Amino acid sequence: MGTSPAMNGLDARQVGHLSGELERLKQEALAGVRRSAGEMSVEDAELFRDLGLSGDGGLAEAEFERDVAGAAKVRAALIAIVAAERRLAGGQYGLCEDCGEPIGFARLEAYPAASRCVRCQESEEKRGGPSHFAG
Ligand SMILES: [Zn+2]
Image (tube, rainbow, N blue to C red; front, side, top):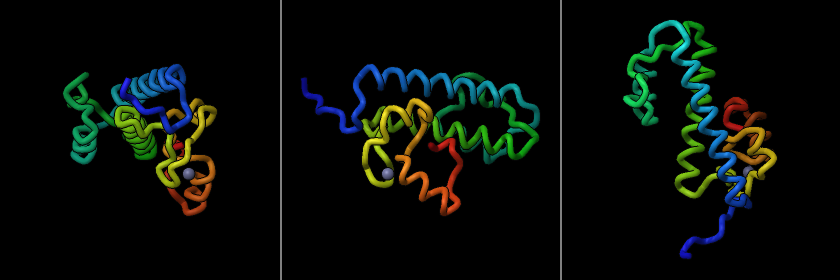
C-alpha cells in the first residue's frame, strides 16, 4: 500500500472523527469572528492570510470583537485549529510537539487541537505558556 503505519496510535476512524471535529471547531471560531463587532486590525488580516483563511468565505471583511480578550481567544483558537489541520495533512497529528510521544485519543477527543501530551502541557502551563486552546 505504501503507507507506513501511523505513529500516533490513532486508527483511521479516530483520525476521521478528530478531523471532523477540527473542521467543526474551525467553523465555530470563524462564525464567532464574523458575528463580532469591531474592525479587524492589519495584524489580524495578516494572520488570517498567513493561515490561508482569507478569500474563502468573506474573511477579508471579517470583523473582530472590540473585546480584546475575546478577540485574542478567537485568534488563539483558530491558530491552534489550523496548526492541527496542518499536522493532520503532514502526518504529524496526534504526536506531542515537545516529546514526540502519542497524545492519545481521549485527550484529542477533548481537545482536537492539542499539540502536546498531558505531561508536556502541564509543564508548559507551569512556565506560563499558552492557553488550553492548544491542548
Ligand atoms: Zn509530550
